[in-house]
Image 1: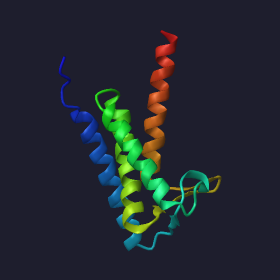
Image 2 (image 1 turned 135 degrees about the vertical axis):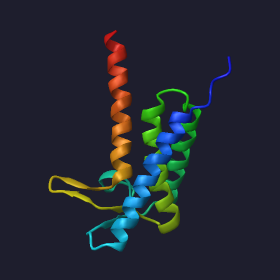
Image 3 (image 1 turned 90 degrees about the vertical axis):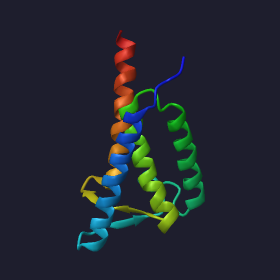
Image 4 (image 1 turned 45 degrees about the horizontal axis):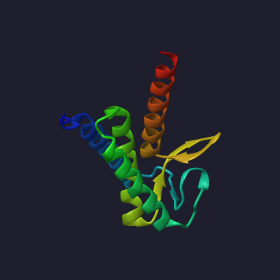
Length: 130
């Protein structure tokens, strides 16, 4: 059986990537306070850009392989991963500009990565109940 093209996966991923990049550009050209993050979430792997780039590429490969399933959730992950990966390749860091007093700084890509994982977990929990 031939699977149809996962257009929703790519559309969602492009939209998230676009919003992430536009938000980071807007922050850079404005007076909004931002930080540069050379690591991953919670300061892990600081100063390891090539390892983080490699991890990002592996994640992209996995997402593309499963792109026919859970298209919106994986599209969120595609856009978020690409957004941060492009920053790492071009600048060597990721711009974080959303600051909460009780949480490390983050960005739009990070938010959609969390949302994508949350949707996958929600779906997994719903399948367990049935």
